[in-house]
Amino acid sequence: MLRHLLKRFLLTLPALWLVLTLVFLMIHIVPGDPVEQMLGEGAAPGAAAQLRHSLGLDQPLGLQYGHYLLGLFRGDLGQSFKFQAPVRQIIFERYPATLQLAFLALLVCAAIAIPAGVLAAHRRGQTPDRLIGVFTLFGLAIPNFALGPLLILLFSIEIGLLPVSGRNGLGSYVLPAATLGAALAAILTRMVRGAMLEELSADYIRTARAKGLSTTAVLFRHGLRNALIPIITILGLQFGTLLAGTIVTETIFSWPGIGRLTVQAISARDYPLLQGCILVISLSYVLVNLLTDAIYSVVDPRVRIS
Image 1 (cartoon, helix red, strand yellow):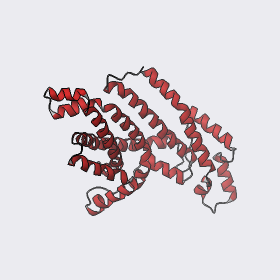
Image 2 (cartoon, helix red, strand yellow):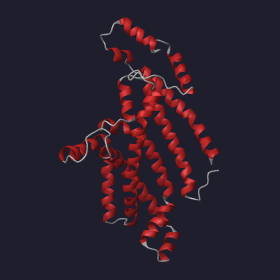
Image 3 (cartoon, one colour):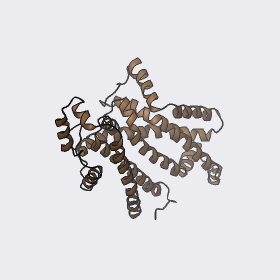
């Protein structure tokens, strides 16, 4: 299995290289000058030229790209223009906050979606199924940039129960995690419902019911267990989406994570920092998918990774 996962990882390296190359070219082609961002528009021409030379921005684009790739091979992500610190250090300081938020949002998503999906499949066509269908519709229709401010207005400003922004204490995790997890819970609920409907019509479920097993045992011990493969697939993909999708949510709640750091890097035209953030997000997505493949054989013995 380890050999298979290593082979899968090596196959993703060209995709990572393509992503980094596209990001490198796009941020250099888009109009804007990081030197003007750092010195201001009224800076002396001599000072601007000197700073541009010290940052290596006066070199040809191909040479800058070669220096960047060489730095990656050495594990050096460069120096941030905005923060005047190593990019690797800045990302390591911010990345744990994003991971914590993503994990919590995934737990919120799973805690809502799995019981709701099982109940909807069990009560197919009945009132619980219709109510859960309405919930999933609202979850899919309301984007994060609308749901986040609504939750702030309700729970922070009107009720005063939770903090508006920042990362201070457990209460500050609630609103960002709920904002991230709501839309994903709606998607996962529908996936769980569909997978469970397919399993509940199988012969082994009829046999389990004929043996007199309780409804809970039939649904969770037999039906859900055999429906876990597509559910785990969606959870793995959603976790990767959470890491990339925290950009909007972290900006709304002033969350000190890598998503907000990416926005700051874009605003400041901080090439090394933006490239480092994209690299970490891409690597995280790849590693989550590899972990999902490994979990398959653990959850379902019928699956074997050769």
